Image 1 (spheres, rainbow, N blue to C red):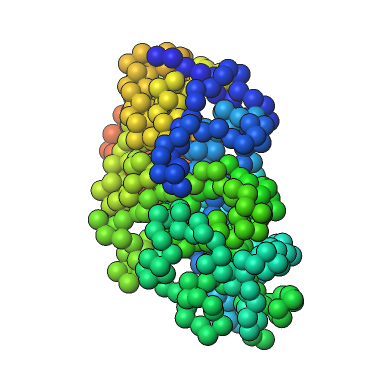
Image 2: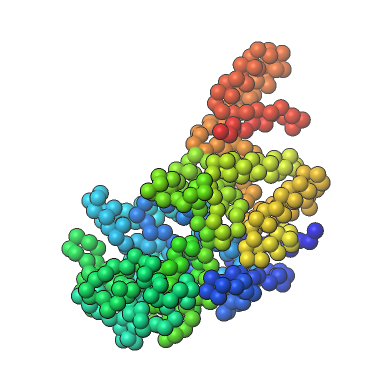
Length: 478
């Protein structure tokens, strides 16, 4: 099996790979084809992911995109010396306003709370922080300037304190979703308002009431529409043309369609994003997650109940462009899979390797270079785990760890993995003390006392295993 040297994440951010990488091919939602990826500037690859609207905790489906595109960025960093990855925070929006009014607090109280929780939850899933995290409220000036540019070029108009994009002025509207304008308007929830020239025209700026957040503008005190926020943040942070724009397939229309229209028109016809990548939605036992069905699973709570790495693995099990079904059984399977892989690493604890120069198995990299084929990459990782179990060599162990690193898996200490339990608070010092007492009881042939201690540990949710390397303990998984 062939391997390539894998620099650490920090090193990958600073310096080019040590050997020429294999080509990457990615599916482009705009062209509807898988195409060889060639960045506009190989010395500055730009990626933008639509981030959360921070008015509450996100659900597990909202985590699929960040996990998938975290793997993409890891892959790109191996191939290019400078990858600039931005993931925005939408911190002004009507749902935020409603949450702030309900609590009687400024919107910043709501947005700071849930943006912090989002960062914490993403970190627990093993997602590296983005290089840039633009906030909409920090780009009001750029948003106003983009609106002015669109009005000046005839692509937007002001009416009754609003600024609206004139969809009829952009002939290519609908190219991303593959439908004509009339079909898009008929299938969308559009606000019918007397100040619109056409029902499909969308809001770029809207007036604010005294109790709503607002900023002074040429059209009066108001706040931005949702779509213009991402266009302005993306241009300000990454440039007028970027390499990859990513997000969930639910954002394809109208959000991403509108982003293309307003960005292209504001920048004199320049291409906005050269690749559009969309992850499929998460379903629950075959049904779409929705509040009306009562099957929305809040990520913040799931992370308290389950081991985060098992959640990450579950989100990578299916191809990113396809729907992925969530079930308790599927989560149990991923946890069991990780138990097996970490068991191999625990059994190889005395096999020394250079953890700073882990190889990346070429077949794993090839799978990811083929439009992020994570199911195939995981199959190759399973082969590596079997090889490490059988061979027990430094090379096999390093290959397993290097392959895991490419997916953001197997980065924990093996013993620590087995001592995790969702929602449990195990006192490790107390467990170690009881194990020592049990060993002393066994040495004194006080087997009744030893069995009683085993029972006490079991009552704490701790399983012990006696072996040649001594007594190991792990947390009983529910």
